[in-house]
Length: 131
Image (tube, rainbow, N blue to C red; front, side, top):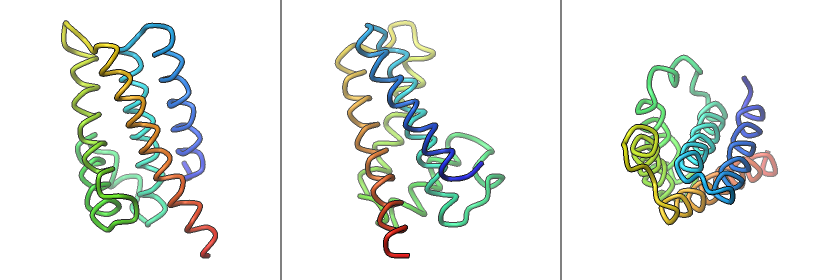
C-alpha cells in the first residue's frame, strides 16, 4: 500500500476512536487510537524508503523503526516515539486485561493519537511542499 493509503487508514481509525470514546467504549477507543498511530507510522516509514517487509514482522519492530528513523531523526517531535510506545502498551492492556481502560485513559489515548497523526501529517505535507 502507499503512504497515502496508510494515512487515510490512520485518519479513519482516529475518527473511529473519537466516536467510540463518545459512545462509552474506552477499550475500543484505545485500540483505534493505537491503530491510528500504527498506520501513520507505516506511512512515514514508507516515505523514507523502508520496505513493507522490513516493517511487517511485529508491532515492536514497527515501533522501534519509527523511533529510530523518524523520531530520533527529528522528522517529527521526538516525543512522538515515546507516545507511540506508550499507546502500544495501553492498547495491549485495554485489549487483553480484565479491567480495561478507564474513560480518562481513553481520552488521553485519543489525544495522543491526534497529536501523533497530526505530527506525521504535517511532516508529510512539509516534505511535499519542499519537494
